[in-house]
Length: 453
Image (cartoon, rainbow, N blue to C red; front, side):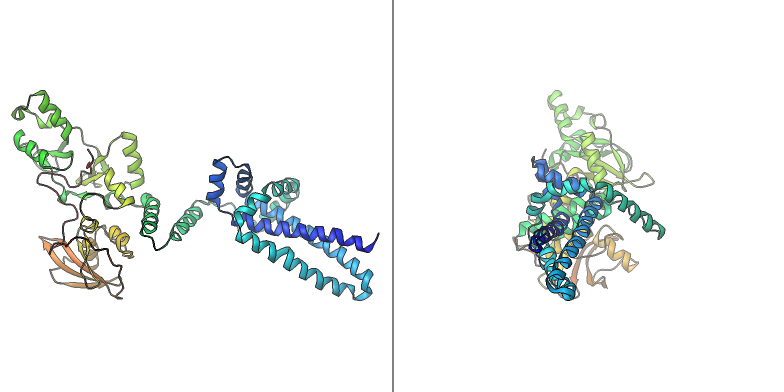
């Protein structure tokens, strides 16, 4: 055989080495969300990519096996050729030349190109790789079995759940979604909030009973009618005797229907009979579970109780949606969130503003596993009920108590101790005192959340 003809199989083996090396990099670096979306749109090649990635161990094993077959074959042919050309010194020349060719053209070049365009390369080479994987399947399966048995001897198990890893990767992708555009920041916060729904309990987002206006069934129907008409919401809890004895939830539409049937005779109405049965949920229920229940029952208003069955507050569908999209309403966002700039690097924060809202609004990292609200966090760390003008420093922030009502902190000034803070956008002139986080008209429930009806 002509020695020059040996160059042809060597070149073919070099091309195969480049193909297998680039395929491994491209298929592992390709965007899984994009491949899934392309498959959903009917791209058959994307379906092949997803099928290969679904058994990544088999795919990588096949590619590595092919590379390890190609390399030695090329080494044998190159050495034989160089021995024919250069005699005894041909082995050294063959090693140098083949190493340079395989490193540059068989590894670095194809892998670099695959890293720059992993999706395009994956779609192009997926059918060919799938064929190689099928051909080498018996050999690869035997190798995988041997590898698993050897690892098992050292107590290493390869079959592990990928759920946590997948969520971490998704959070990492979301954190990379950044840019100068405020819309990008809003999108990133919304996506992160969706992933957090399963970790947040309704007790952290509910409106506490102290901030929930309720209807006393013992009052005269005309008085109750005025309270309902003054309320901006459509659902109000009804109690008899004391606020813990809730007899139902009154819907404004039911009241109006009864008024229509009675031709406006409010004095003849029985408010307790008009009220719908109350729906109680435990305060430990996650927002994700509660969102499913709201959809299942076609409800969006529930009463929250603690482990002893005592009434704690109300939670609505709007409360859960606000955890995703932020505060909703007609007032400026700062006033609505209960956070406004103090002008000196600090912020005036309502005591009932949740720690999660502060972190989300200002990009801080205050711990939210110790207390639901900022006032609760201060009392938890201080181990006492602070007095007005007292200051505390913890978690890298300085907290000053501005106002109290009885034993409840209603306003604080919070400032990062490192002097850095996010600047809030300017709004209409703010009042001298911070507005409440949940403004309510007399007789209304500020947490009803039924603003659209």
